[in-house]
Length: 138
Image (cartoon, rainbow, N blue to C red; front, side):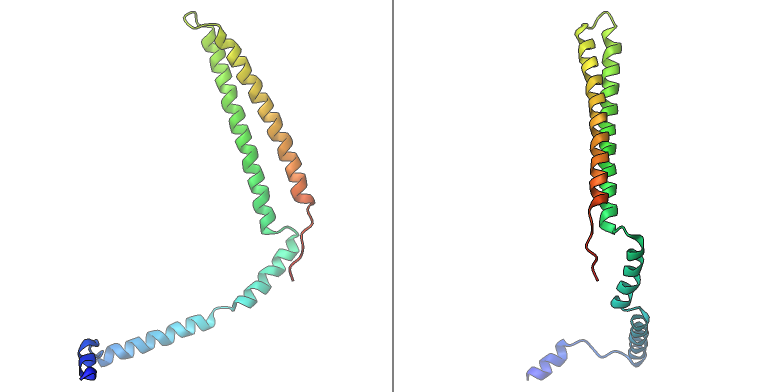
């Protein structure tokens, strides 16, 4: 009784030409996967290239993030410099208070300090990143 119910629930059998097509596709897929290089051979090939370079990918990422941080410092410095210059120009107009000139000078001072700090930190971090000895993984 249960076997007859299962036969009704199961999908109908595939026609002959579809079965043949399915077999040929699975055979082709097997050939494609068999022709790919193994993971071990890829690791050996690319690890030799990395050893030749003397700098690892993680070091590259760290250097690039250090450069991005320096660019952020430059961005902040330029923004506060432009703000300071704009406030100095606005302070010269008669309808605005002259106190804006002091704020503008302070913003320019902050821009200069930010630029110097960013440059110093960039140089220090770059020296630290390049001076760290890496353990070679074999």
